[in-house]
Amino acid sequence: VGVVVVDTPTFEVVAKTNAVLPFKRGQGTKIHPKVLAMHEANGLWAECEALYKQQKGQESIRFNEEQRLIQFLHVHGAVDSQLAGFKPGFDRNFLRHYMPKLERELHYRDFDCNTFWLLQSYITGESPKREKPASHRALDDCMDAIKAVENHFEFFCKLVKGEL
Image (cartoon, rainbow, N blue to C red; front, side):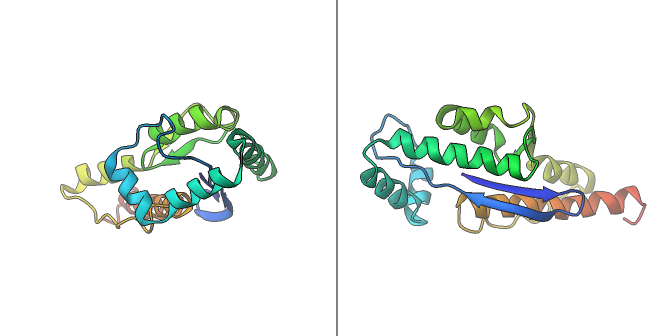
């Protein structure tokens, strides 16, 4: 789980943090083979399993991390913020299942960063360049989404000002 607080409209990062949660294979969670391969390649799956082995009661580490992330939101004035990202529906479902108290601290609306990409594609008639994700780790994915929105925001500012 990655959390980044940004100032708008400058997109300056105010604060960021992340949490790795304990999981083990066959825990009743269906994981798409592509996602599993991606998380094996970036080391996340091994970290999750190592945490699971370290902690007998996996719910306690999840609870502690959930509380820490909620506190982070409060400290940085980000309670009731929208959940933003490239797949916020997936992220919200993950939080709703594994960190429901954290999910309830967020605004009920999501901000899908792909919307800017789609709008720019419709306006220009061509797809803007999409950067390959850095590492498929939560905090890096957050930073990738912020950079993408910042780039698209600049495009729309120029469009509104008649500079395009």
